[in-house]
Image 1 (spheres, helix red, strand yellow):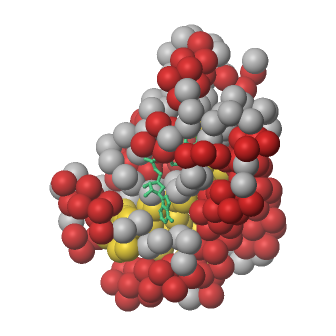
Image 2 (image 1 turned 135 degrees about the vertical axis):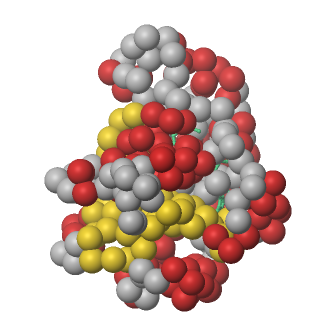
Image 3 (image 1 turned 90 degrees about the vertical axis):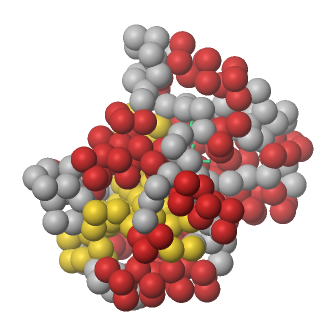
Length: 254
Ligand code: NAD
């Protein structure tokens, strides 16, 4: 199939269901002629992927909180598919009590969990992929962030701090992996109703506020996010290194 990703293979991490941003990314990778291998957090999430009709031989379990799990998943991917041309890291988590009220309610454990799953995991997967020579010579890593990294967004709290660390990780990883041909970038997505977002206190207000700040009153779509992801994974974006690209229909302008 023709397309900007024809002949390329990508690992997509973070599909929970059809509303997931990772799902939007996978759809546009496929639309651009790429192949997709999916990773899921645990057996419960695997069932969701199977219900979506995804082939069982195209998915691996990977809990990003565990280096052993990442190692095992990447060994499996390499054995079954050889080298890949990039990966999409669309994974985040913070305990519910970290996502409401004041940042002063944050706990050491909750803060560290958010950092571990939502930020360090990008370094962990990049490190394992490099050590296992899983990434092809010219490859691209894309992660997902949110404007709560730079603004004090109501209830986003600890996750905003984790996203700030994630964006900084993108720059350091881009510098160090760039030497061997791997680009690293982030998409700062507008708010979308996904499973992760429903964990944020007052998420309906967050979604409505985000929509109202778009230039045309219409939220960004999964397809628009997926298209930008496909572009960032492709050679068309070879000049983009260590960037955070807003795909939020102008929310960041306000
Ligand atoms: P989602 O709930 O569909 O996806 C989150 C994924 O993270 C799930 O598949 C979940 O299984 C996975 N995950 C959590 N802990 C994990 C672990 N320990 N190991 C492996 N996987 C784990 O929600 P989403 O909104 O699509 O989130 C994807 C990314 O997009 C996240 O980084 C999120 O912060 C970011 N993002 C979301 C929005 C939004 O408004 N939805 C906006 C900007 C950025």
